[in-house]
Amino acid sequence: MKSKKGALVYNWTLTLMIIFILGWAYIQFYSKYAKNEPLGLKQLTLFRIYAKGESVLFYIDQSAKYSLEQSAYDLAKSGGVSEIEVSDAETFAGYECGKFNDAYVWYQLRKNGEKYNSKDCFDEKSAETNLGYIFNKNLDKYLVNYPINIPSGNYNYRFRDNLEIIGLASLPININIFKKEVLEDFSTATRDVKPKPIDISQLNKDTTKLSEGFRDFTGTDLCAKGSKCVLKEDAFQQLVKSEKIAESKKLCKEGTCLEVYSGYRSYDEQNSLWNGSTSEKYADRYKDPAVRIKYVCNPDGGEKSCPHMSGNVVDIRLAGKTTSTMNSADWNNLYSIMTSFDTNRQPLWVKYSNEPWHFECCNTPRYARAISQGVTSTV
Amino acid sequence: MKNIFKNKKGISEFVLDMFSYLVFIIAIFFFIFLFKVQSATTNHREITQVSQVPSSSITLLNYLRTPVNVNGKDTNIADLIRLWHYEPEKYKLILEKTSVEILNKFEYDYNNPSADNVLVGGFNIVINSKKNEDNSLDYILEFQSTSFGSGYILNEYGGYGGFGKIQAEQFVPISEDASLYVIMFESAKAK
Image (cartoon, rainbow over all chains, first blue to last red; front, top):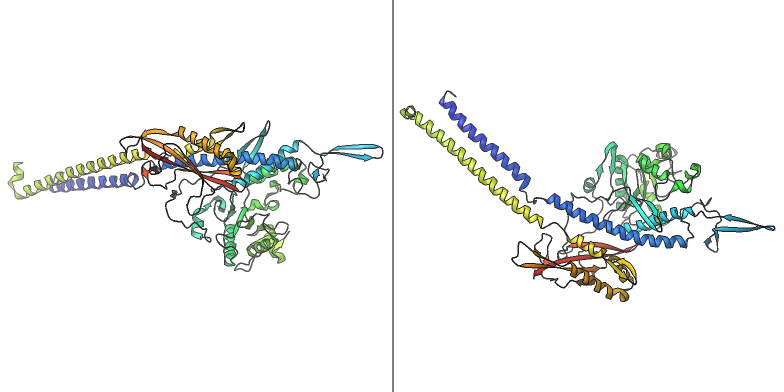
């Protein structure tokens, strides 16, 4: 710094730089800590979410208690047989003697000439499996009433001693900690809470794009409460188109018209159905894989035998209905919407003719076969 | 120094130098002040947040989980509410009596920063047939602890609010297609 001019410039530059650095530090500090958002808000939110979680668990516990009582009653009423066993016209898995005076026969004594042939018709071991199945169905009915989305069919059951049931959840209950809470205030005026027709931009925000081109829309209006809904991106876009068509046909008075209750199943999910980890206990009921395959597909067959594993298949119904409350007009409406033609003169979806709720799109083998045959429903 | 004052240029450079030092010092002090003020406000906010840690929902759950013996059978308040829902005449009295007893035990004394005297926290339970979309209440049954004061409901920030701020809510299952909506208000009044 030999020249005085240089020293002068140096002094001012240093001063301005220090001011700039401190100003920048202040802005950084301010933007981090001095927003309107109070300090510790995230931690506080965690406390609140913890309380919400406790609240949900309490509801589930109470529901489980009542469901178990009801299930024991239902099972006793049906003679230890659950409806899944009598759903097949050909065989009653583990149950062979049918009904007498509307009650299932446990022990059969048949006269054969001078002799009597006896036969044990009821496998007592199946009562536990059946109780688990009925319990799961009853519990789901409770859980679907809860305001937040609790996954249905989510528990693996173990029984202990006398009517003590332990449910191990496979999926967690998701509570969005980033969603800004609307605090309840009963003194405020009426809020407009009526569901609105599908809002694509909101739907994009509410859904998650997963890896490998999947879209998770669990918890949105297009997904049935308690269900896990994941589809391939193309299939998801087809679904949105179908929903728009349903709305344009004024199929629903308010809110969304369609409701997916099953979409993509991973290998593990399909395998747990196949190997009996779910409440249906297919593997226990149908030990012979050749029989079992009539009720549930083997994941080892891949997407070809288990189309749900492709991510291009939906099990769907009209919103607000269940498969048992859907009447024939409803099924017809659903079919007509889902198989509407796209701009490229191809149906959005094709139906699996054995299951009115099952639709496939986006070039699955069944879809391709239907297109080549010029039909919108095929086996 | 002598050299500086020998010519006018030297004087002006000296003044400018001094001025830059002055600006530098002022800037430093200004930012010290700014950061000081900022950190003081932060502490204040942090303290405010401590009072916001929600305990009401746990209190409500504790109330609903409290064991109670009904007709010789061990059960809890949530079950009793369900029984009362099915047979109101039979279970109303025991539900009210037990609830008030429990809520009285929940009452607590405390010092709130915004009040000088010791306060007592009281509780009010309201059972509604459902949660209304318009946020209006749908009272079926209500009971409160001895010290509950409806004019001094604690708001969600730990301060006082007017009537209407909900403290905690809980759905109590009744049947496969029905549940009751139980809410709890918490109040504070001078002891």
